Amino acid sequence: MSPVLPGDAPLVHDLIGIGFGPSNVAMAIALSEHNSGVGRQEPVTAHFFEQQPGFGWHRGMLIDDATMQVSFLKDLVTLRNPASEFSFLCYLQSKDRLIDFINHKNLFPLRVEFHDYFEWAAAKVDTMVSYGHEVVSVTPFVHDGVVDHLDVTVRSEEGLKVHQARNLVIGTGLRPLMPAGVERGDRVWHNSDLLRKVDGLEGTSPQRFVVVGAGQSAAENVAYLHRRFPGAEVCAVFSRYGYSPADDSSFANRIFDPGAVDDYFTAPESVKSRLMAYHGNTNYSVVDIDLIDDLYRQMYQEKVLGTERLRFLNVSRVSEVEETPDGVRATVKSLVTGEETVLDADVVVFATGYSPADPLGLLGEAADRCLRDDEGRVRVERDYRVSTDPSLRCGIYLQGGTEHTHGITTSLLSNTAIRVGEILDSLLDRGVESASDEARPVADGTGAKG
Image (cartoon, rainbow, N blue to C red; front, side, top):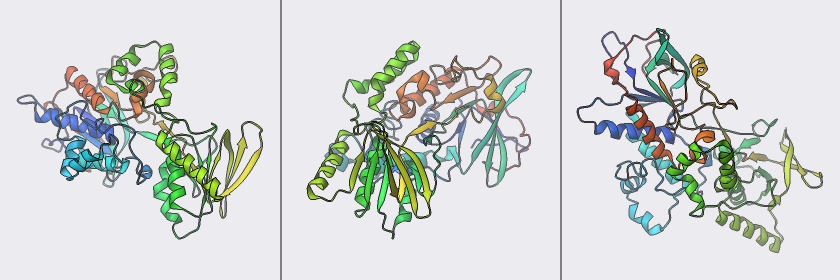
């Protein structure tokens, strides 16, 4: 944190970050690298607040053999600064695994390994973050009709404290998405709950699992449950005939290039829609071909041996879910015939994706000064800054929730390193001042330290 002035009056930060997932860890790294090389210039003062007690990224999906779907070179820094000491290769060197990884001849690390890399990188900038601190509101500080900075109220075990910022960067991530009318419960899970809840089944003898969904996570869940519980039947339910392979060919992957963001941003709305339709199969509801082949091979082998535990209910959907005293009852309806099949299961797992959190949900009155397009979506500039009315001079930057303006990479890791560099450049171009140049006493704070 920045030093305080006499009288315990906190400084106005150039930037406050809400959330500390991979995107804002990358932002903190970019700031750290900038500040270490600014010479006689004043550094950019920044701090991040994360409500979790420590770094964590989709922990419920860290299945032991699941791999990343992006190259390790698309880490937190390399595309922005290939010489960075925060790269995945530097992480491997620190763990004495660099040579082993090279000999592995694989661009796609285990997901659990990449999570460990994120934790390693986050620990190197942990002076810039307060864990266990939840941002509960943002209020514009109005002076002569102009908002030059924002009051950010943060809650921790020590109570409430107000911090000031000239700019915000919001990286609050994605929220698990369940079908309409379905609530998560003891026996009804979203796939993000899988590893946290599955240990509770140890010592029992599950007879049947139902996994709903057609994407990578759904297929991984099917394979994992089938492997971990050799006495249980695993039923996969999806509306397609089968899993569709992800298009990870070289030309298609150019949709994730930094230059593709420029193309998408400047394209007419009709072209944006066509691009998403053309290339949605690079990311949405698709599965790695190797996993598809493994599951089909397993299904066929069980048919030959007469020991079918792996079932695929295709061209179908789950129409009803009801928890019972002993488990959960799922009704599966054929989309062709309308015939319904009732499955009594121990657990139903919905691998039905995620939705972005409302990027302006915390902004209160400040949100009223943010502009929206004709469809009610937040207007966002090319530098990821929310368009606002002229009276709001603070920058509000989004790391997520910009798919409608910046394209498919918004919620993915592919362009993270480039994006945080562009946000930093925007801050510098707009003339951020050092927090040491201005201070104002906190109003209505409890004095709790952040």
